[in-house]
Image 1 (spheres, helix red, strand yellow):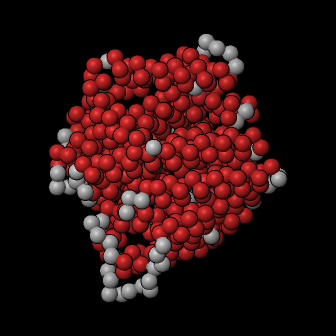
Image 2 (cartoon, rainbow, N blue to C red):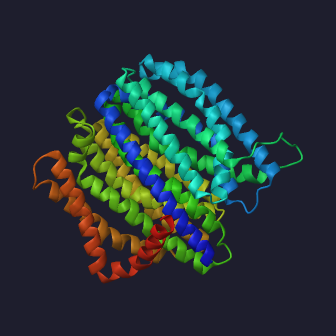
Length: 484
């Protein structure tokens, strides 16, 4: 257990270091491209990806998570999984090409068709990459994954900025996505140092497919919740409204992706090794939930407080309409962030079938609520996201903990306590600080500093918060030392 804890700490340190670098690169990309491109140009690509990116969920088919969480994966099974993912990715590419004219008619924007054609081929590359990335994650090769993330992100950002400065318009964003997908596959291929063998009929991957199919259903429903807003806004309000909303949503998604995906690489393999130690499992999961409260909850609270100066600093005055949308979405991000811990528990405990049933009930309700916000435009949709995020986290936490045999009450208690005493006040303090100074840069700096200062002081001085956070601080220090 001690060696596993050290490995998890080292993995967390390396992973978070890489993700901070990638986060910085993505913010630079968003800022530079937003100052070159118009909201309408950004919105055109967002309208396409809001529908076509469902193929990214389908081509994975949940097989990456199934491979990572499995007790053993033979070389023959890994090869069969590779060919299965590649075949699914190819099929997705064909379907995307066929849908391109339909999307153009749906939105009434002819440019959408060319964008869809350009993005369709990437699903083949992503399909080929699926098991290479899963193999690195399963082996807990966190440094290799970090090299892939930073390398691919760096190349794609450079290509997109050069293209935008050259007058490529919305094609700069298309080139960015294409470069990232191809670079990711190339770097993973080199680092894995294995090639798939021929498909073998005598080697079954049905167990992986069964687990993956459950995850596929849940991921598809999750995709619908995250993208029905862009589709609806695009169809009702047009590309400019989508551009403003999608940029605000991207600022929400960037930290979610930078924290959730890497945490899955670290947390899921560790949890999978603790099935036979229920007390250790529960303690690890509780600390994981608290870590998300601090890493994502605190970050989103401060983001909500400084949304106005942040938008002006990053994107410029032309994007001012995205600031109130961002503030509301950031509040929903607090609950979406910590809700990801529930997902890890579902998968680690092998409850993917139950998860699918839960999503089949909860996700359609969430989608209807989000669509109900459309008459009020992007801000109405943002408020709908906030309502459904709070409800989904609270209900989901209790349900999965009961099924998994984990006591949900201490987890809920520590989360609510942290939100009431640390996270919520930090956001309010950050907003208040932006009101007492002038100039967007000074307002942003003052807000961030004030929010983080409150978090440090409240954690140190409020006894129950200090007690719950103490083990987390210890793990964080260990991760920093290991990464160094």
